[in-house]
Length: 109
Length: 220
Image (cartoon, rainbow over the protein chains, first blue to last red):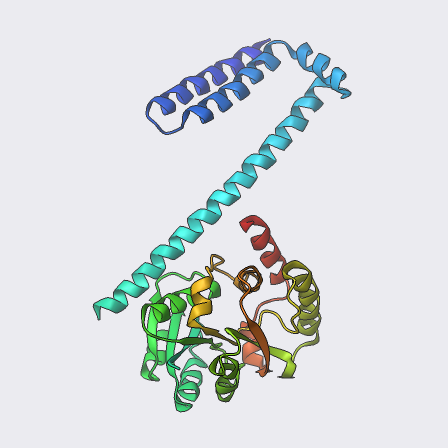
């Protein structure tokens, strides 16, 4: 089906971009591997939709799509959590800068 | 005992002159940490005779207090008293809250409005504080009678033992956790907290309790 071709094409572009980022040092090896696994699994699920149904049924879930959604939600929650932690860290670092600035300005008087 | 009164302030232009004047009249050295005010707080505090440090951007009461602590520890102050800028506290009680430290019996003195007295406290504030107290006693293990009371006296030694990382209102809970973890010798001192229309408008909304819980959860 066309939708499969389009999705797989887009994912291949994403994978190429991933390797590019790895080469440039923007992401580390673990991140590359983790995302590769995710995207390759996505390609698998798109190419063989019945695979998801088989796995789902094995796990006691009705539809393949449901299984994919369940996993996606867990992954999204996890990523969101990591994002929040990252934001917190950035906030703390901003405060450090503001504090240093405040004390430095005082020292200059 | 060389003492510094640290007053974190954000947009307290209406009260800051009076607050600083009252504290200075009792003979104390005052540091106002201007936490990103957009009004004349910094200028007014300076005119009233306080030392002023500026946070260019607002970072929160916890962050402002820590800046004051870093400043004090960088000089030879032996004690620091946290004091509010909104006129809710009495400068005349600073001496009382320092007493346990002077007698060298304790390292930290925490003000308690329930041991002391309050004027015009809104009922929902009372309820929120009491509920927060129950949670805090369970969470920190400290048997206190008040919580989130900004009126506190800290000895230099105790300040060196703690490390404040919470920038906003959750710092108050973090402080208690660290007192418990570092086994710092603390005591409670009865103090007076006055609620006026002004201070009530500047105060924390009771819904802030949820923000604080959230901050504490994420930080852990």
